[in-house]
Amino acid sequence: MAFVLRPVAWVRSARGEAMDDGWDDVAAWIELDRDVPDEALLGLESFSHVVVVYVCDRATDVPPAPFARRPRGNPEWPVVGIFAQRAKDRPNRLGVTTCRILEVTGRAVRVEGLDAIDGTPVVDLKPDVAQFAARGPHRQPRWVDELMAGYFEAP
Image 1 (tube, rainbow, N blue to C red):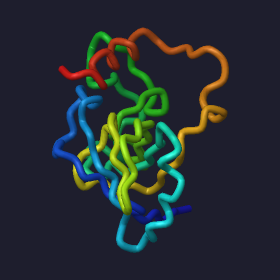
Image 2: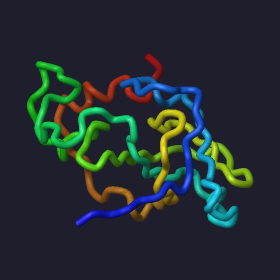
Image 3: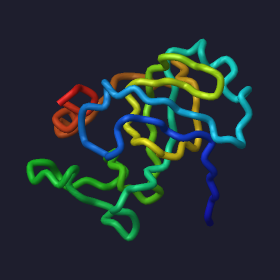
Image 4: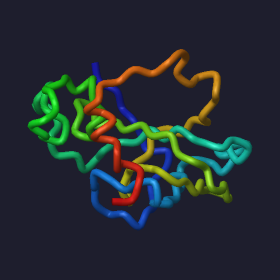
């Protein structure tokens, strides 16, 4: 079975290459595709955060990529399956990030903390709703804390 996704928006950012860390200081615009009407953003300004679903269209290690590997190739971290990590090189190249909304103007949303590079196609935007957040305490392995230590902070 195959699915066809079409971009509903595009990332406009000063960051033109994928880098592993320092995403929090990157402000980006998400501009609606010309086929999407302005009214699609109506009401989004009343939310503090937006969930951005995008295609990692310049990922290189896609199927038949390994479905298990060490995150970032770090020999100190365990081999884990692709579904136990958030790498951009995934079977369907989809990325999902929750971003702070800085402003909504006309046909664009200005966000902070989006880990997608300039020109990235966006396939969906969803308001971040508290009731959809994870319920109960989080649990994750120590290597994730190590990997994420500088991901959003500037290097």
